Each structure stands twice: as C-alpha cells, then as structure tokens.
Length: 131
Image (cartoon, rainbow, N blue to C red; front, side, top):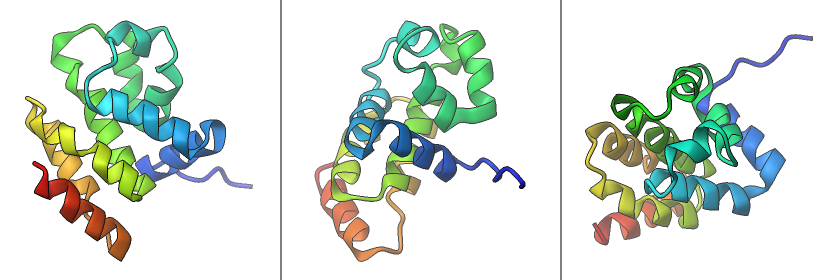
C-alpha cells in the first residue's frame, strides 16, 4: 500500500486526528498570532505541530528555530492550516494575523480565507470586516 503524499491539508488532518479539532485550532491560533516562543517549537509542545504543518521545510526551522530570518515560517504555516480547518472559529483566529509584520504570513492568512464553502466565505467576510 502506498503512503499518501503529504500536503499542508494532509498535515492539518493528521493534527486533528491526533489532538482533536479544538486543541489543534487553539495551538494553531497561538502559533499564527506569534504567541509561541521559538524554544517551544524547537524543543517543546509545539514541535509536533510545526512538524506536521511545515513538513520538510519545518526540518530546517527545527534545526535552527531561533534564527530571525526563519521566524515567520511557523506563523505562515499555522495560518495556512487554519484555513484547512475551514470553520468560523478558524477564520476568526486569522483576523489578528493580518497585522503580522511579515508579508508572507499575511498572504497565507488571505489565502486561507479563500474557500468554496458558503460557511467559510461568510466567516471570512466577517473576519475581514474586523481588519
């Protein structure tokens, strides 16, 4: 049997299966908002989260997570993953991400709010109205 190819969406699903949607959403919300110190990502409770949502790119970050030039990546991955959860709470968690100083994190948040589901679109509209 072939192992399914990893995608950001697949990584998000793995986290939901392991942690539950509520716990994962809380962790991703904190991560996307920049409330998690690099040490907690490199050697702490967020190591698994960063590994699942960043996959191969996360390996470089986890090797040298204190490097300033890499600090925006986990925030970007978390914003993208919140979009894969696709509910109103996840969209609301993205509101603060639009104030992030790095363009890539803001771009990930904007892309995360693009979805064909009407519930997600309405949540995104409400979230963007607050920005």
